[in-house]
Image (cartoon, rainbow, N blue to C red; front, side, top):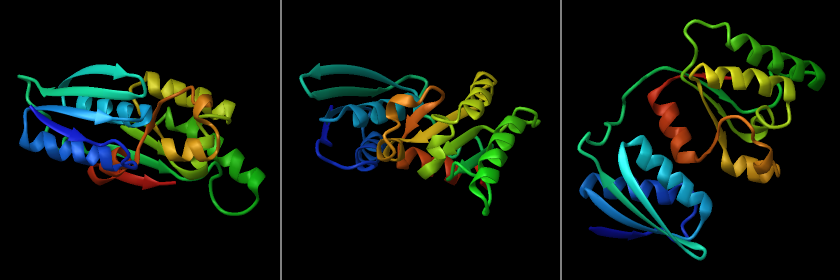
Length: 188
């Protein structure tokens, strides 16, 4: 079993190093010193259909990741619509109008056929699934309908909103770029 040490590495380097190592080995031991990194690496492993075992030792984590008989998913699977939202307002102009438009945009998405595969929030866009109560309710409906909702963890941290995320999941730049690279992207 190969061992990789990603302690002290900044996002998204731990995810990238883990993915590289999984291309070469069927079983890894990943040494991690951050809960956020631990969650991101587990997310990657699960996405790749790998089995994950976690051992916590104080503020450090030891993840054993093993490819399963179902094999690791190949990159490039699925090319659905991805909405990339980088602001809590839609368009340029008056802020009040922009806030109204983003609420209308999110509430109308549930009516689209087909629904998008993913909605990704970065920068001030992370305010939409956190502090924008009306939009958050519509995002919950979209998530229940199978749409993946991702919010940038660095952005949530910057705005002090990590504990206010009630819909979707915290993501990282590697996962975001992978989604953008594989999807039919609409930037909002």
